[in-house]
Image (cartoon, rainbow, N blue to C red; front, top):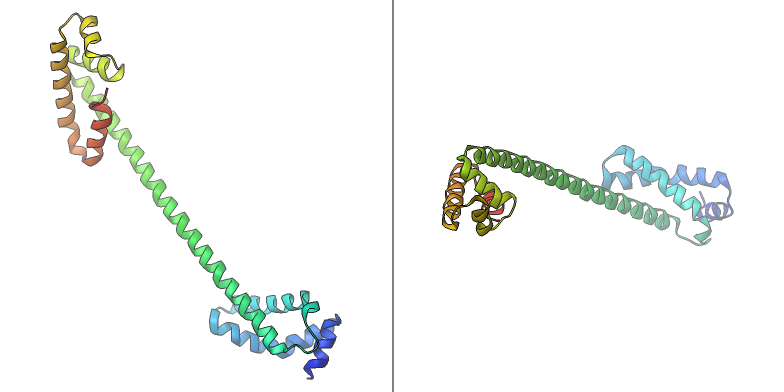
Length: 192
C-alpha cells in the first residue's frame, strides 16, 4: 500500500484510512509491544491506544511523515507510560504496606501501653494504704512532698520514704515487661 496516499487520507479524516492503517501496522506493533510487556491484554491495550492517539493527533502529521517511525515512537512512549504507571503503583502499594505495618506497630504499642497501665494500677492497689495514698497524691495529683506531709500530718522524710518504697516496688514488678516498661516507668512512675 502506498504510505503517502494512506497518510493523506488519514490526515484528511477518512475513517477507512484508520482501518487500513490498523490492518497494516497492528501485527508489527503487537510484536514490538510484546517484546517489552509480555502480557497479551496489556499489549492489545497498547496497540489500541496507539491508534486512538494517532487518530486524535492526525492533524500533527505531515504528508511526508515517516509513518513507521511515527507509529513506533507513539508505541514506545505508550509503553514507557505503562512502565511508569506500574512503578508508581508499586511505590503506592509499598507506601500502603509500610503504612499498614506502622499502623500495626501503633496498635501494638497502644496494646502494650494499656497492658502496662493496667499492671501499674494493679500494683498501686497492692501498696499498703498509707503508701498508696501518698503515691496517688504525688503521682496522680502532682502534689509536692511538703504539701502531702502537711495534708497527712506526717514528716516530709516519711513522705519521701513511702514514695521511694512505692517506686521500687512498682519498678521491680514492671521490669519483666522489658524496654517499653522502662520507658513507661520513666514517664509515669519517676515523673511527678
